[in-house]
Length: 414
Ligand SMILES: NC(=O)c1ccc[n+]([C@@H]2O[C@H](COP(=O)([O-])OP(=O)(O)OC[C@H]3O[C@@H](n4cnc5c(N)ncnc54)[C@H](OP(=O)(O)O)[C@@H]3O)[C@@H](O)[C@H]2O)c1
Image 1 (cartoon, rainbow, N blue to C red):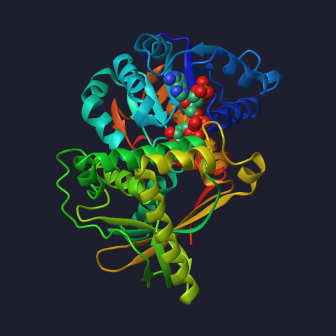
Image 2: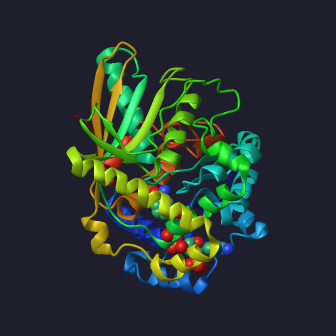
């Protein structure tokens, strides 16, 4: 690795989730032995200074770097100064590409919080070979989408190998508890995805392709059983409804299977849904979720209605759940895996804060620490080579330990 000024730069430290991440890193470095030479970055000196001032005395030596997400020269300058960059500047489909380009040009490792499948696909197609040449390791989806799903399946497969000597070939993830709200950036990303997909028939085709972000030569043909409507799930003995994050999580898990040499099997199936309860009440709740999702999508594709929603009803850029809501939020995800001959195993992944912000800030923090510390030795990159990796194919057991010890994300057998 070339000589650079920093181990890590947080780009977008002024965003709602960037502030949470920055605070988490300041607290982490002041209470743990692991230390990095790091800086915060963004487009506004004034806003970054405000973030820095809010972080207390231990952050007062934190350098501020200025770069606009649309300025290639500034981004190249930023990337040439650091080994790793973590970005919370979103919607990524609108602002993210120049930074990916700068990272693959400079061989800078990168991770982010995108859940925008259509953008990830585009970035892989455009920049993977350059990343392989320059050694840049690009890891998308390091937040609630898709760390618990992707690392949850990875953990479940480890348990399956331990107990059965073989991987499970069918996995269901069910959301048991999810307590938390969305931020302005998340809402903007979601609406942008729906609008881009509605305007482009090729993207609509990708939307129903579970392998859309797998490498081109993946050769998977197994039909996947999406949960598109309210239905009863006898494995969990309750009604289920579609889970909005499944659109990204399912694809990330299939890409992980492809990148790991089909470690989960050639005919691996995976789907996600929300548990809504038993009986009439459970069924009604499932139907209500489906109706709510459809109404939101219809409203999002209608520009005047979505503008009214964004202006009057939904959180704006920089807004999101209060610190108290983050602390009282939580999530509990249940995984059921079955082998080809019907042996089954259950695990759960839980988070002690709201999924999208409190827990996401900590997950992203540990992902970036893992990238900057666990996968570097004596100044040389170790582990994966340059390319576009998923969380479970870039990281390993050390990431699960980090999440359990320092991020309140616990993986356990049920
Ligand atoms: N995967 C997950 O679980 C998860 C969870 C939470 C959020 N997210 C995603 O994370 C992203 C951030 O969300 P958020 O709510 O924190 O966003 P936000 O508060 O709206 O912040 C947007 C950030 O982008 C920056 N920005 C915009 N245009 C820029 C430009 N041209 N140059 C430099 N910086 C620019 C803004 O800088 P200024 O402050 O200077 O305006 C701000 O820091 C979104 O894409 C969201 O979908 C994902």
